[in-house]
Length: 105
Ligand code: SF4
Ligand code: SF4
Image 1: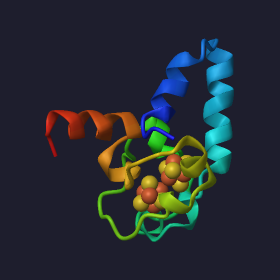
Image 2 (image 1 turned 180 degrees about the vertical axis):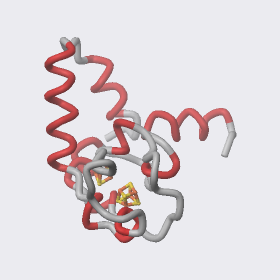
Image 3 (image 1 turned 30 degrees about the vertical axis):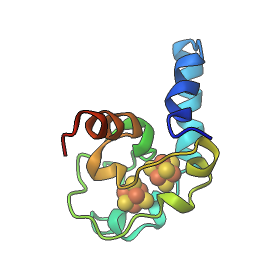
């Protein structure tokens, strides 16, 4: 599976705003970030800190320190063929891919 399958699939979907919201909610349900030590280091799951699916939504506003990343074991990561990790600190799959391609760290 190509590593940009994730982006390709998202772009091929002609979703309404409601459908897009459903996709994001489904991703949040699949996300296992709340089991991760990096997530825990930021105080764990709270009302202010519940935005998961960082691979889709981009970096967390709270998490700064990288401890360990469980993304490679996440069902969504395998399903979508994601290539990167530490989405909570480094940004979404697409953001990391763009930085990789243009050589910016
Ligand atoms: S790949 Fe990582 S950020 Fe994305 S849904 Fe899975 S655990 Fe969450
Ligand atoms: S993106 Fe990776 S490092 Fe960040 S909270 Fe999720 S599993 Fe942990």
